[in-house]
Length: 467
Ligand SMILES: *Cc1c(COP(=O)(O)O)cnc(C)c1O
Image 1 (cartoon, rainbow, N blue to C red):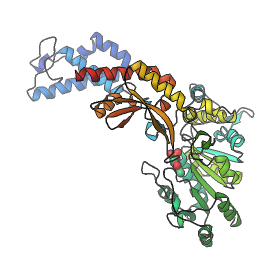
Image 2: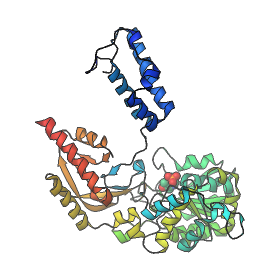
Image 3: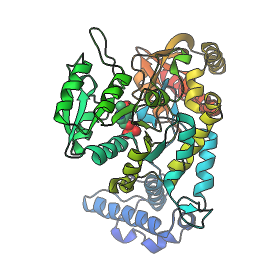
Image 4: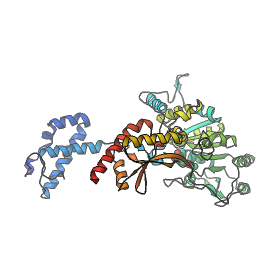
C-alpha cells in the first residue's frame, strides 16, 4: 500500500528525488516526533522507510511522495513504541483467568506499590537499628497473624516455592507422593517435573484413583526426606476413590520424624463454601491438620500479586531462607508491597469488600442481573439470560457460580469477538453458538463506561457492515 502514489503530491520517479534523512528530520512533523519518541527511534524510522523505498525502486516499484513517506515513518514509530502488555476487560466470567493475569489488585495494593516504588524504601534496611535488614520480614508478620504460622517466606511464584522446598529438604533423596496427585496444572507445568528438577527422587505410592495410609507407611522404609501432598487444582477425583486425611499423613510424618509439605496451590484464606462453592482447603486448615510447610500462590484465591508463599515451622523456613536458591527466586519490592497490602485486607476482615476477586466471587445473582439489564438498556439490544461463571486459575474445578449474562446475537460471532479483541482496551468475552456472552461478574465497575462505549462502537460497525 505504501508503495503506491500518494493522494497529495506527485510521485517521485528517481532515487535522487528521495529526500535525505536530514531533510525529513527538518519537517514540522519530525520535529514533533523528536519530542514524542526521541531522536534515536525517529532517525531509525526514517532510515527504515528510506531503505524500503530504495528496495522498492530496485524492483521497479514507484516511490511514494513525501507525505506518504512521513505517514509511513509515523506508523513505524507507533508500532515500535506500542506496549505489548495491555490492560484488557474480562467479560468472560472466569474470575482467575491465568491468560488474563489472574487476580486484579485492590486499590490499596496498587497504592502500596506506587508509594514504595516511586521512591526509595526500607526494603532491606532496618529503621530501628539503622543498618541492613531483611526483605523477608515484610509480609511475614502479617502471615503469622492471619494463618497462625511460626514463620513465612515469600518467593517469585508457587512453582519456585515448591522447588525451593524440595531442593532444600530433599535433594538427592526420596519424596513420597501419591499417584492421585501427580498433576499437570496448565501451561505444561507438571508437578512431578518440577519435583525432579530439584534432584529429589519421586517415590510414587497408591494407584491413580486410590491411595491408603498403608501405602505411605510402606514407603517410609526407603527413608524419604519428606511426604509431599499436592492439591489436584484443576481436576476432581470422583467415583471409587480414597485418600488418607491430611492429619493422618501428618501423624505418620511426625512418627517418622520427617516433614509433611502441602502444596496447596490456590491458598485460600477465606472459606469458599460461604459463597456456594465447594470447600477449598484453606492455609489455616492445612497448618492445623499438621502440615510442617504449606506452599501457595499469591495471585490465585489470595487475590494479590504473583508470589509463592511458604508458611510453617520456623526451623524449616529458616533453612529455606538460607538456601542460595532463595536469592535467585526472591520476591521483589513491588510484589512484597502489594502482597502486604492484600494480606492486611484479611487481617482487617475486609477481604470480601476490598479484594477484587472476592468481591466478584461474592457478587449476588440479583446484583449481576441488574448490571446485565442496565447494559441491555444502554445498548438497546441483547438478551439477559441466566448462566454460570467459573473461578478458574486451577482452583475449584467444575464449580460454578450462578450469574446473569448479556447475550448478543451475531451473524458472525467469531468476527464480532475478533473486533472486540481489537478494541482499546480489548474486550474478552465468551462465544457460544451464534452468540457472544458478557458476564458482569468479572467486569470491574470502574471499567463499565469504557466497556459499554467500546461495545457500542463495535455493534455500530457490525450493523453498518450488514446494511
Ligand atoms: C498453580 C499451582 C502451582 C503453581 O503456582 P504458580 O504460582 O503459578 O507458580 C503449583 N502447585 C499447584 C497445586 C497449583 O495449583
